[in-house]
Amino acid sequence: RYFILFLFATVQLVLANSHCGKNAWVAFTINSDDGKQTCGDMIITSGKDANSFPTTTALRALSDCAFHNYGCTGSWQGDRWNFCCNKADDRTKGMHGSGNVEFSCSDGPYTCYDFRW
Image 1 (cartoon, rainbow, N blue to C red):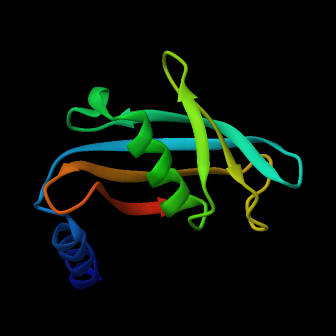
Image 2 (image 1 turned 180 degrees about the vertical axis):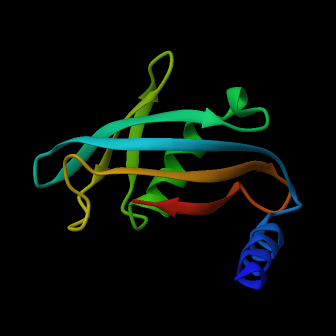
């Protein structure tokens, strides 16, 4: 039992991208679903320099890591992003999710970890 916990902690550490200088933990909720788009809110819950998380990076990461790379648009509204993503059949109104995005990377725009619904 303890070995499994140690192994899980080790795997989590190995997954971190050492080329990224910042990260943001985000949480998101789908508030509407019209059959063509799912729309909602995404907030920052914590992270190193998360207050400098660029909107373009946040929405690309949301698209790639939570919406099967279907494409998301949106804007920062003071304390959250309002977003709309092209409809994915398994994403519907009322769903909640979270994940970690590492950004300011020297090897690419971002890396996503632990995105869950």
